[in-house]
Image (cartoon, rainbow over all chains, first blue to last red; front, side, top):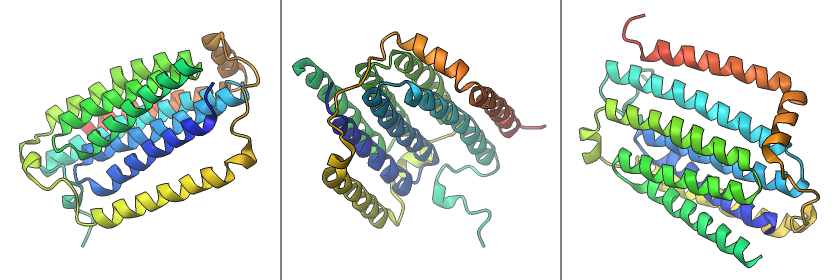
Length: 100
Length: 168
């Protein structure tokens, strides 16, 4: 097995790319996809430590994270569809109905 | 050992490159395709870490389920206008810079403090009958969280239906 630090660096790279995507893009759908990328990076970390300690508990946590990601994607995309029906835009900085 | 690192670097490069492409593409459909590539590469990493069950779950659930949902919503939401508009928002320079600073900080912490956590340690035991071990632990030790997760999925399903329905 390769040292765990390799997997940690890979996970860090994916996490930072996801954070950059969330903070800089304007399209809401791409922001949601970046969140999926962040959750995936966390899963790599959990899996690497699970392999390192020889226990499957980390993989169980990863299963729960995938469940959360599915729930979050379903609700988030539902909100986008509901918003798009009222106001035809997908850009995050034009969604300012609650701002005055 | 050699084959191990070849596989790791192949999948890692694929994942990072397609993640960067995902964040920088203008068209959301292209972003979705690159995200699928990144998720498949991550599934390869899982397989290398002896997590066969999670490898299958990743492909079926992420690539087969969540990404289909994303592509459907991209088709529903009209993107002809968005393709011609600015990709990045106004604070993107500051935000990207701060994210890179955060990444550099964590990198330095891994570099300097990695020795304290014995990250080079060889694995203690094998995870080999993987689906069997995962099932045993999931249904004995983590049975209550498993049931709570099912309630979470039910609530999310109802929430998504209520949100996306035209008239309730």
